Structures are given as C-alpha cells and as structure tokens.
Length: 315
Image 1 (cartoon, rainbow, N blue to C red):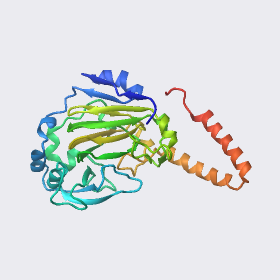
Image 2 (cartoon, rainbow, N blue to C red):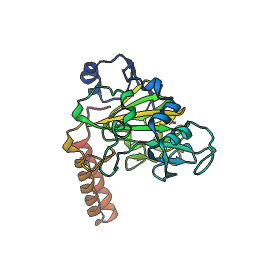
Image 3 (tube, rainbow, N blue to C red):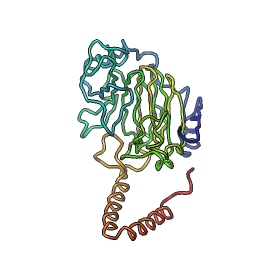
Image 4 (tube, rainbow, N blue to C red):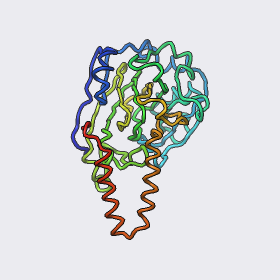
C-alpha cells in the first residue's frame, strides 16, 4: 500500500476572490462544489450527446483491459464517429468491437490538426458549447485548452503529471482520483511524465518498494464537482461509471516559459528541458571517469543540486 493517506478537501460556494487569493496560492488539490457549470450536468445523457455531438470522426484509445498503460502501450488507436463512441463507451458488452466484446474506450479530444491546434470543446463540438460554463477562476489570456474526455466504466488511466494547472469538471458519472505530490516523485518510478506503477491499489512492492512511501491524496467526484489539479501533481483516474468530463487547462507561468510546439500541455517548460539536456551531457562526461570516481562526483553533484535547487517552501 502507499504511504500516508489524505482526503482532498471539498469546499462549496467558493468565490473567484477566495480561490485566487487564498486557495490557489497553496498549490494543493481541491474539490469545488456548487460551481455554475451550465446545463451540461443534466443534459449530457448518452442519447443527447449522440444526437447533438453528431457523427464527427474522433480518434480514441481502445484497450482490452481496464488498466491503460501509456508506457507499454497496451491499447490501440482507432477512429469512430462520435455518436458511436458515446454509445459504445456506455455499454458493458459490445456487439460491435475492435478487440473484444468487453473492450474499454477512452476519448481525449484533440485539435483539428493535433500538431498545431490545441483541443477546445467550444471549437471541436460547437453545438455543445452553450451547455457548459467554465469556472472563471483564471484570466482569459491564461486559457490553454479544454479537453473533452469520455471513458468506459472501470477504465483506469495511468499516473502522470501535466505542466499546466487544470480543472477536471466531472459532468456525468463518477470518478475516483488519486493524486501524489510533486515532492514524492522519487517514489513513483517515473518514465518521462508517467509512473511505471500501474496497479496503485495493489502495487508490486518487490519491484517498486519505494512506492510505499508515496503520500496518497484521494477524492471521489460526482456530477457537478470540479477538481483543481495544480501543475506537476501526479494523478491516477478511475471511471467508476460511464463518464463524461472536461479538463480546462491554463498557464500558471508566463507564456514564454512553455514549449511553443506543445499542443497537449504536457511538455516540460523550456528551461526544465534545457536543464535536463545539460544534465545528460554532465552524466556523459562523468562516464569518462573510473567507477569509484564517477560515483563520488555524482554524489557531490546530487548534494549540490539539493542545496541549490530544492525548495523548503513545500511539504
């Protein structure tokens, strides 16, 4: 099992001023209740989405198992008309399928040209725009993307972090979300931005012994809930029911800090990428030394990084 467990706080009726001045600076997850999201929480049924969303072709993930793994890619990409996706994702068993009759579906909406355009539900699904209101808790010029997400019952997404702040708006269905602090990254066995530990409820501690030290922040989302996920916080999401959600991402840092080619909001800030490249060159240089010396100077480098770069302002 993981380390200490905490429930993500829930607050109702939070004002813009209260969020931006008092809650947002704490840089911790928070579930907001009672936010005016428009009519989407009552209107976005399977039938309504199938009719209004139309037959627009969408690229989806299809998996034979519930636990999706982005590292090993235990899923395939397929294309379906949007109305067919909604209908299939709501089913437990399928008469039509790609892999198996109990396969799982996951939509993460994309821009018109994913290489250049960010996802924005208001542009890709304009007939649904009038149904949903985004929380006005950030400046309009900070807006980055709004991502439409549809998941089959039981689907579990891999643990990962994003580099921008976001609101996960739970429109229909229920989700369980487990988050891990950025300060616990050393316990999560990272491969890029993703954790290798897939089964967080029953982890293989022989393979991942440090995972037991990771602090666990958990919440259960119901329709109308809005989860604030600060940038760099790892999150693992299980759709307990057929679910529809929208992620709204915005820029916490000045725009020039982000990679201008990033349309997903998951590329590290440019300064972090440059620092990682410099570190790779330093490690290659250390490789010129005998093992005993390489080990010693590597340890000195780690201590230097801890002394100069680690913050004492975070838990």
